[in-house]
Length: 322
Image 1: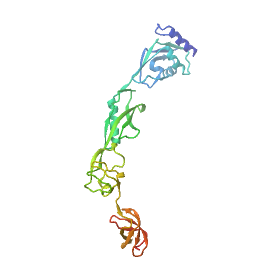
Image 2: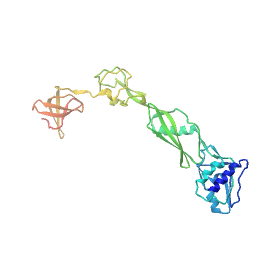
Image 3: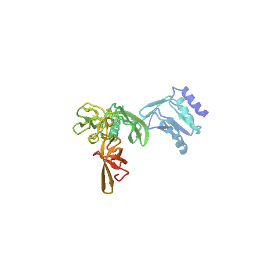
Image 4: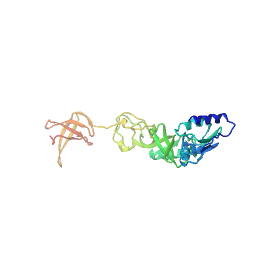
């Protein structure tokens, strides 16, 4: 190792001389300019290695020198900067003739990945992922130098799809199956849906009909959660509070209408197989369709529990008619 250091120190001192030569059975001549593929660098990438021993020539050609310059860039080295790269390898450096320029360059070949190509890969992925949405590119990525090889673009979501903000798709650039870098691409995603809105002034307590609601195409990303997209899910329900025309009607605006009130006379129905038995009764609670209420049979004076039906009758659950 001391011999290597002596060789490079002498080379640096003789910077006006194009090479340093010592008699030996292995010759290593570093090229003034080298172009490599990367991503790693070997001595054989930047130098001509020759000698009588095939095995030793192969060993030194494959000697690792660390990372190559980034694709599309050039680095300049000197004997002093090459020395530690060589010294990191535990090999026998004796009996070698070195020829090293005072300065030499190493460039990494590259292929250009256009920003349009990156944006289109990200957009196609997002359109398939956010089905039914409109996708708009916010910023075109810059062209990018990538390593040589079979190019592959692999887009993936970075976080959730945001309908009320920016959505990011990261495009991983791979060459020959090896990942190089991930490029973020920003989009605005809009989801247009047919949403239930009021056609007239609606007051608290109003029961919605086909005439009081309609569907309107709106940007779902700007709506509060709970909006409805089907008229059938609104018609027949009762307004909790007033809304003006054009207002979006959501689940929180609606309630099931009260069909049976406390103290109201009701028809009690009991089913035994295919037979239905009817009796008059009084409700001891108010309830909407589907609610359980307590009722009293006016004839037997018995208290029963039943479920409110759409026709305002009460179907008892635990009796055969009272």
